[in-house]
Length: 339
Image (cartoon, rainbow, N blue to C red; front, side):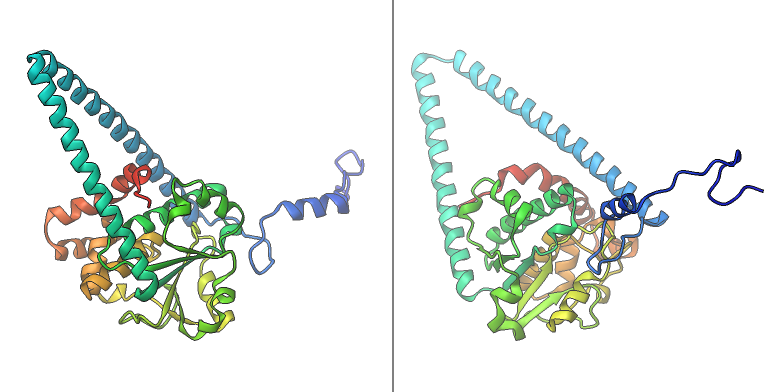
């Protein structure tokens, strides 16, 4: 029989000192309650692998779209040069002037649209629906997840700016790496949006009774949007690691909670957790249409919806639009208009 603490030859086994134990403990991820984070379950690992494959496929499609766009630009350039070579000098001058005129009109139209957008967003700060994106969870995310959330916020601002009746957006708890990443976005300093380093509880202490945290774990179903209320969206790319964290936070702070009435209108093929920009777009659609069903079907991607709901939605056009939504957003992320 081998004695405990000794090998088969009777020699003492090496032991791990207290210092090594302490070091290992500090290297383990810790959750908000202070306990050691459990490893991902087999099901969670499968979901993570699926997500990684989806991201890789999306990156591949993005690269393909970029290459196609480059080839199309090159084709148009060659056509233009050939058209100039085949005409007289006088006709060439007319073509060049015509092209300049078209570009000038396009720039003027873009400038006009930008000014209108500025007016809409400025008005929203005075009388629009207040929506907060809570960035207090950045310390729980990896650099890749933070980058993903930054992109979602960029989409939020772009979608909000295109609305006829935009919301008044807030970014609270904007600190550390999250703040650095946001400031790297082109034109971020010109965004018409309220940015707070403080948490929403600190920044809006006098309006605490009007705060409503939107979380799928709430028992309260959101029937209508109230302009007096300030709706909070949790800025967390959680990868299933932090279930229930937004609900627990709201309960500890003593603020109201509510969930979108998704279950009343469609069945989700997986989790009801949506991205930050999807939640905001649903709210914006509802402000425009006053119809939850229309808002859900226009925003929630096809891959998250059950087949029966897709058939009820009707038409291949909507289905195709949902399938391409993520790819279109990815291809346009560098072209977000800023003021």
